[in-house]
Image (tube, rainbow, N blue to C red; front, side):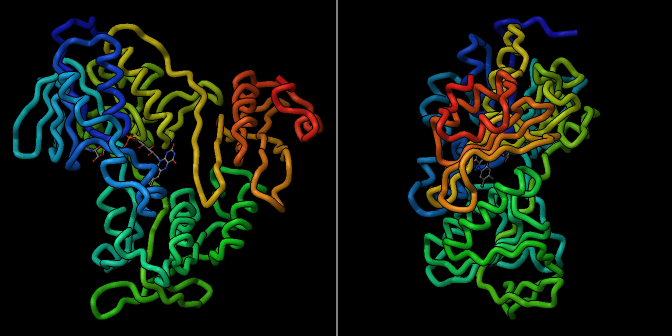
Length: 414
Ligand SMILES: Cc1cc2nc3c(=O)[nH]c(=O)nc-3n(C[C@H](O)[C@H](O)[C@H](O)COP(=O)(O)OP(=O)(O)OC[C@H]3O[C@@H](n4cnc5c(N)ncnc54)[C@H](O)[C@@H]3O)c2cc1C
């Protein structure tokens, strides 16, 4: 049964990242008048993560540039911001969260926006090595940025978006970069083989040594505990100065699990961001939510998803239910290549390339299922992206030959 909203509702948010910060702003916009507390473990104002592998890492952005909302917003909107504060438990019976140290905060509605942590490589000594990095927080990026000096050797373990973005920034900064991907191609879980091949070409052109099918078997340590070399299954040993491990994310679901809420690769929520307890919602990277398009459930790691779920949850808390139906999208910047993805490609049965992936740096890959356009990766073509979004939203049936025809503007296919 749902909770009838009142002006006195006390809303507590756990996690002051993208989803948490967007939620408190959306909640005030939606008209909620009662007390709102945003609790975050990290110090400082909520900040955006995408620049950590882009402008912040390259030194073009400062920590202040990363703020999701102007710091003045929290006071103006009467948001009690409690950063540097960790929630250690949820007492659902009492409707309290328990902070580390024992203080309790009462809630009418609790929103879990706890994100996740970088998946670690389970190798002895690696966590203590001062030149081994993971990238999930501003502190992680700051520690790595200091070591990015021209001529330094960087080994990136994992050919996903974060690893490739860091490789691009490092090359531009004059580092000597090797990317190790255990699977036969980079970005294997998220894009078509043609898009992977494109990125492998671009990075190779930029001077990155991209190795696919390259399994890491161990590390050699220097006397000071830092990693001196990465050992591969092939028997090869790559001497290095810096290592970045970018092998995915583990959602922070422990609080929900300990409170007896369902977790299935993320905190299980419905299309209104509600858990099975009507007083508890969850948003952002930590959630597993219904996937209207393909059936089943999905967990997305993107800013648009965090922001959209934040809006959905604000609507739920203010009693104006609006299901989360937005079509997912995502972006990635590497060198001068700007990727924008719309829709979800999972389950596609055909890929149509508009343009060429063998030369140049602009094309689009359309993912079709049963003849319908389900998703698209659009590289460095904002106009085509706008049209691709509409084709995906309409689940348009377009003849592949027409889709390929560069003489026909995409917008004419709508
Ligand atoms: C390097 C990098 C680059 C990225 N680039 C892109 C991109 O180009 N495009 C894109 O769409 N997405 C990108 N993403 C993904 C995107 O940033 C995330 O999907 C988004 O930030 C998720 O927001 P969130 O609020 O769910 O999680 P987060 O932003 O991780 O926030 C969760 C917060 O909760 C806090 N927390 C957790 N547990 C507790 C607790 N018990 N008590 C108190 N606080 C707690 C954490 O400390 C954290 O600050 C990138 C991510 C990274 C790491």
